[in-house]
Length: 98
Ligand SMILES: [Zn+2]
Image (tube, rainbow, N blue to C red; front, side, top):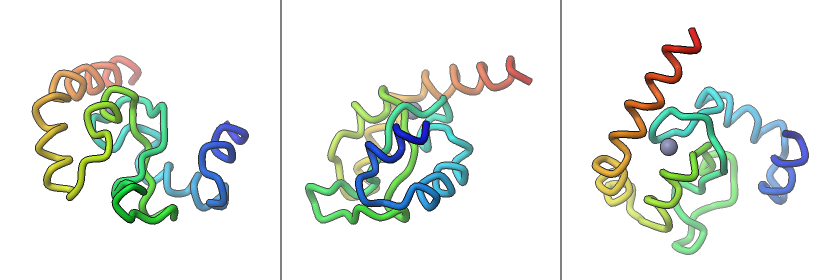
C-alpha cells in the first residue's frame, strides 16, 4: 500500500494522503466499494490541485464514469445513474462483511 500511495500520489505526502483516504474509510467516495485508484475530484486537466484536499479514493468503475468531468454537479449527474447498481452491490458487500 505504501508504495502504491507514493507512486500514484507523486509529491503529495504519504501521511496526508493516507489520512485523506481514511476519511473516506478507504472506500470509493462515490459508491462505497473498496477503492482502486485515487481521484482528483477537480481534474488536473481543468486546474484541479494535486493536494490532499482534492484527492479521494475511487473504484475503477466510478473513475471510468467520472473521467475528467467538471464541475462537481456534472460529476454527480454522471455517477448518479450509472453507479446506482454499484452502490447497492457495495452496500451488500459491506453488510455481508459485518
Ligand atoms: Zn465506486
